[in-house]
Image (tube, rainbow over all chains, first blue to last red; front, side, top):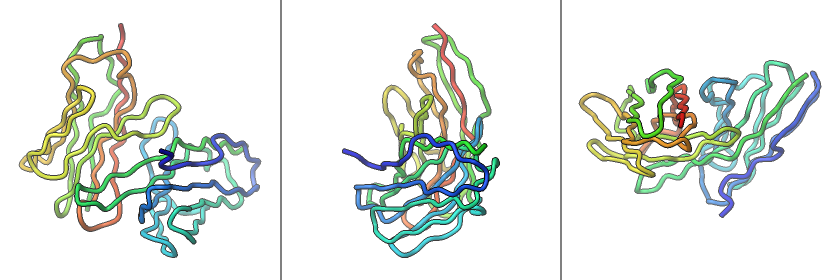
Length: 114
Length: 113
């Protein structure tokens, strides 16, 4: 029962480099999200998607891009990495069932920009 | 707009002590309410949820009741264990409409033997 899977788990980037965090879910959820969590802080929404082909900005989208070509995948692209993007990134997905919506998280990707 | 305010930590308790972590919310419509738990180095895991007023969510000895009149969803456990040490997040989510979930800032709990 995989749920939400993120890769890589750890990554060190140099300033100005680019990378993509991969996220896939096998629960057939329409809704997917990317959050960042800074040390000792709560979650901030970067981008979200309500279905394939549809994405929208969250609270802190600057410096990031997303795409949603399939229901399963929701990669997050970091362009021109900056030290301020050092954080833990969580991908998540949610259902829209009759028992209420629940959001499910991946295990996180720890990113350090040096 | 929607928001969640939860009790600031850190909270330190002795094993077998009673736990309360306060959570209040502001919402339009009729949201679902959640508690998530994050163990060190891991992602957030659903602990319990309630989808309508007066519902009680429960799991692993933890409970929370959806109180519409006080807009609250306080987390309680009668006797905490060392293994309960984690960060706890209160969250609000859409029940029927809307897209986003709103999280509190998290409360760190440490239980000492």
